[in-house]
Amino acid sequence: MSDDQTLSVYGDAVDRYTATPMEPEHIAALDHFAASVRPGGRVLDLGCGPGLQAETLVAAGLDVDAVDATPAFVEAAQSRGLNARIAVFEDLPGAEIYYGIWASFSLLHARRDTVSGHVARLAGALSPGGIFFLGMKTGTGEARDGLGRFYSYFSVEELHQMLEDAGLRVTQTVTGRGKGLSGSDDTYALVHAVRDA
Image: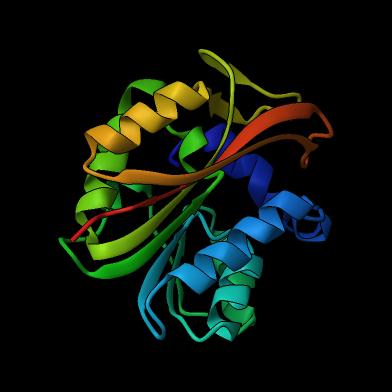
């Protein structure tokens, strides 16, 4: 995420964001991801926010590399004792270094025409058998929400195709509707995929 307006919104809303509860389906997706990754495996939390989900992954015994483009989020994650650092999508990792990638409602802040490239590079960072989680709001086009955050929207079919084009096999998809920081009622998709050996 490198949209300055989006980063500013998040930087000013760390406490509110931290206090926003996760949807039950999202909690279940996090638990499923943690249980699916090789025990003790290194995972990337891409867009870690204040580190709440990374904290859960660490508690599950995983070695978490937490990154976010918002300095205040990284500080909050570090205050939880997490290995967190500032990074943008363009700072994507090398080849076959993670057993899991948790991209939970982060890539939706990238320009629509760049998301598939980011997914392909992330897929390449997975070791064979690695697990990829992608959480996205669903819809069409690009827009800013009521808080000014930039979003790219995709259909479930487009997300599946994007993951398949990156060499991943979709294993589970959950769709739903929920409210986030802005309070708007949005549809979303929670997609699990694997890089087969």
